[in-house]
Amino acid sequence: MFIIRKRTMFVVLCAVAVFLLALSMILNRDIAVQAKVREIPIYSVENNENKVSITFDCAWGADDIPIILNILKEKDVKATFFLVGSWIEKNEEETRMIAEHGHDVANHSKNHFKMGVLGKEKVRDEIIECGKLIEEITGKKTDLFRAPYGDYNDTVLTVARQEGYYTIQWSLETLDTKVKYCESVDISAFKKITLPDPQSDLSIY
Image (tube, rainbow, N blue to C red):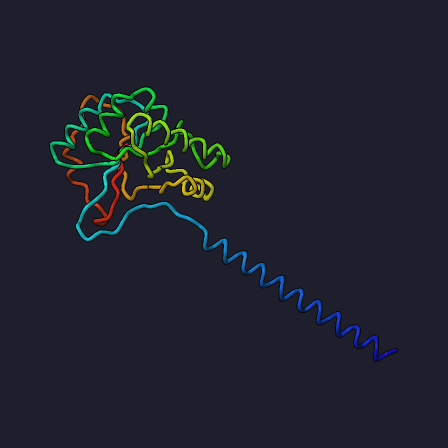
């Protein structure tokens, strides 16, 4: 009887050891998989031409759009305009004007909510609805998305990717929304801006 009990105990201990080893391998694999699928937005793109990307976010007001477009045309510069869906609905003419001038029209959500606090399906709706408006007004689809306020999490990035979008951030911001409104702005100050690297994305709101 003693030998049988000893063997039984040995078998049980071996089974427990195998179970713990298998459990450890599964947990480590899950952690590794989660680490691999973590996504981050695009802040800049490497290039060897000393070029930067200029982007504009349009969420309110459109009086300055013709002025901006004329300046860009005069300087032979193309930019990307991230448009909020509700802005598009109020400014269809300006939306078409941006596209007709050869600039990229991109997705900035339907209602300019903070995306990081929204549920998965609400995030999806915000992206899809804005995309539909852009295609309806300009006749073109876009694959670029910028979260309002730059507020994102893993859910936002994953949903955007699932809907066929690259999520774009910025590496340098003009902070123009932090300045009190005035009748005129000395734009010569912008000439003094030194970009951190030639791949920077300069964002103007």
